[in-house]
Image: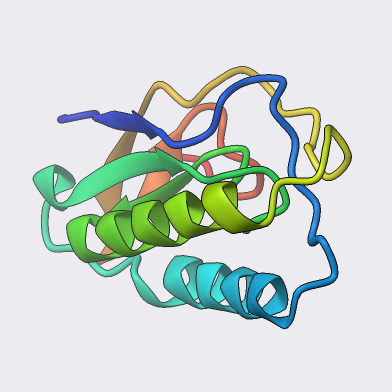
Length: 117
């Protein structure tokens, strides 16, 4: 099993939608990236991504490489445009230990909220 953890947010750095329509759009795009990029055919297709605070996947999510790159880009945009203090950061469980492909879907191995094997 191959596990790569891409940490896209700093622990303790918070984000909140600062009232910008663009920030709301980024939240929608992040949710879409998480919902639509879990397809896989083998464990090597899956990686664990941790998104910026206030975005889907902020506690870690298993995605395919396309989804990981998409969520990374969205998180970078969020961090440069939408940070507004420590509100919005979830208290996350221990970090995921990896990702695997199960029945054609990327799943976390330990740690991802609502998405574990």
